[in-house]
Structures are given as structure tokens and as C-alpha cells.
Length: 167
Image (cartoon, rainbow, N blue to C red; front, top):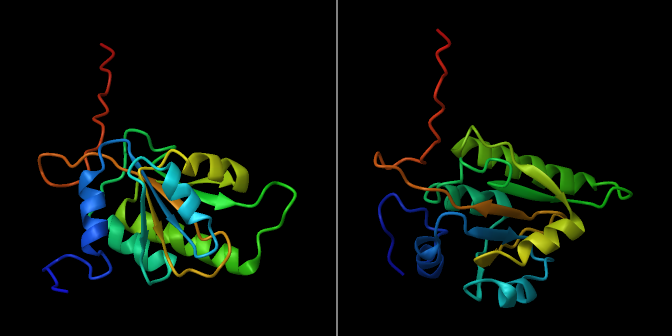
């Protein structure tokens, strides 16, 4: 396997090809090793089930170096799994969730990843373009990233907010 400059080594040729094929609004599920990834991949747009041998934050970090997030739909640009309301999030789940959120915000400060309870998250995962399964063993180590647009400057395209001049 050869490496490329400025491309994180965790991004395999298969994953790079998948990221390149995604269009604006397509979603990528990055999940832990306990997630029913094969089932989700069968329902995905591409049918892709890619395994990356690293923990969740490392995979998010690698993916977010190349994948623009959807800044026009900030409420859905990044989602993370939480337990259903009557279940307490285990400490290890809190750790991985906090690490995932921190990593997403590192790459895209305007994004505040949103929670989805476990069953809503499973439902949301059915509409993803592809599935990337990590070796993450901490529970609730699952995120969905929605692809945005690369602007003319090569950076994530952000909506232009026009101020209204009241004269």
C-alpha cells in the first residue's frame, strides 16, 4: 500500500473512493464494533461496509480532514448516538461521545453535533450512503456525518448571511 502526501493513512483507497463518490447531503455512518454495520451497509445507498482498524475519534479526525460537512443543514450535519431516555449513558460512552464531538468541532467549529437516541439513530443510519466500522469498543461510539460542499476556495462552503439594512 502506498501513501499520499496530506492524506491521513487511515483513509484506505476504498474509503477515499467512497468519500469522493458522496454528493452534497449524503450521509456517512461511522460506527463502533458493536453496531449492526453489515445490516446497515446492506440498506445504504452504496452497499459499502468499510472496516478501519482504529478508534472512533481517530477515524472521524481522518475523515473530517477531507469531507466537508453540511453547513447549510447544521442540525443534521453531525449526529451522535445516545441511549433512549430511560437509560443512563455509561462512563465509557460519555468519554467516546465527548471525544467525537471535540474532533468534529476541531474540523468544523460551526457544527454542534446533535444527539439521536439509539432507536432514532438506527433509523437514521438506514439512509446513509455508506458505513465505516471502527474498532471502537466504547459503547455509543457512533456518528453520522452529512457531506456538504467544497467551495471555490477549497474550504467548506458556508451560507452567506446577508444583513438587512433598515434605512
